Length: 148
Length: 373
Image (cartoon, rainbow over all chains, first blue to last red; front, top):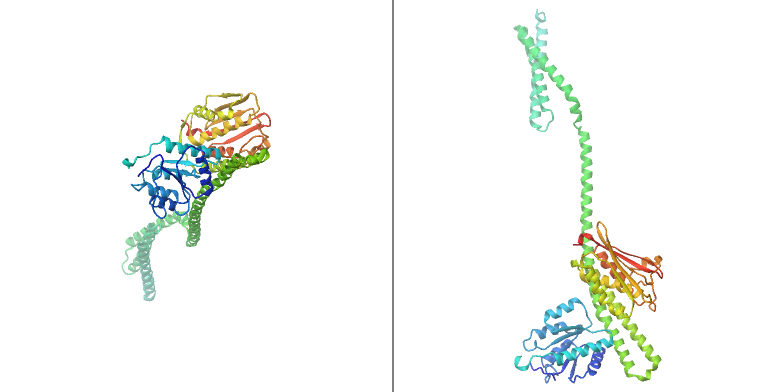
């Protein structure tokens, strides 16, 4: 695993509107990281396992993972990541519309590193995305290549 | 001279007495056989008396025959006396037995009782069948209920997830539109902000409705609660709503209760929030919280000197989406008090309110003392 502060942010979300709004919010921070957008769980796993068109992929610094998605949902992706020795040290933040106890408990049970509900209000969404970006890219210390 | 020693008369007597004796001896044997076979017979000792008496009668007839050729008058007289004695005893016993014997149901009475019993058994069997069928219906209903509960969960999940997303998008794009399109002008900006506000309000409605449905399903986890401390925390949480306002709080010393902390906190937050909201414009606003003890309940009240309400509408106060004020006057979703009602009811308490337009409102609720410390 090679995570460094310049690594990309992986945004896995099936809603083009959520992607657009989160991207806009990220753009307004001073983070310079590349954001890689994947539209469902299948694509996320292809990326992480260098499959399909993702042979040259970079390890992400953090994965922002939606839960409700077509084909493979976020919880399944999370389970796969956290049960794989090579992937499990990547921080995964569940970023979802669901504030259901069952989803929250399930996510932490599977090893999610954070659980964030997307706020309805855009000002708050922007603030949330900014906080997430700052925390995971600046405040938090990710595992270094030698430790992985 | 016995029977004039006319041999025909003598034989008439001998043969007749002989047959009578034979019959008399055979009857007790038959009776004894009958009694021995019917173990359940009532008064079987009476049959023995009959047998004894009849044997005695038979013996007197045999003595008659014997006396023709060998006059043994003392012996036959004694036997006759014994017969008389046993007859008298049997007769007396029989007379005394009649009332008891009458009490024994006759075969026709027994038949009637039997058929009544059969009827009862049939009715009971039918009732049992009915119970079984009702039980089956209950099992069916329970499984239907479980199914619809599951459906409801799926529904609330969809509401929580799928309805919130478009609202977030509307809100986000409106915000971007306002920020990035200066050509909108003041009117356009105003309209856009109104759209965003409506979307935001709908988001709050969805959240509250979900919280309301959650209150109905949540399993109560009861614990001892310091009521005054809980109210203090709720007041702190509501500080932003009370900012810049002159509010006079009069909070009595309240009893501790045992309740679900999260749910009871929600109730207090709602009732205090309402008191703060509806006293807007009062200077000073006065909010009083107190309690009283009854034999079985703690009764709390929260009184304000705010907008109040007309008692004609009191039944609408606790209904979902029911509001007594227009949003321009007092904002709200119409779910708060419905939620408080549900929380208090689920704790086994009661809630009611009194008010007068322009003079304030008082909300009362009770919690059973059985759950108090």
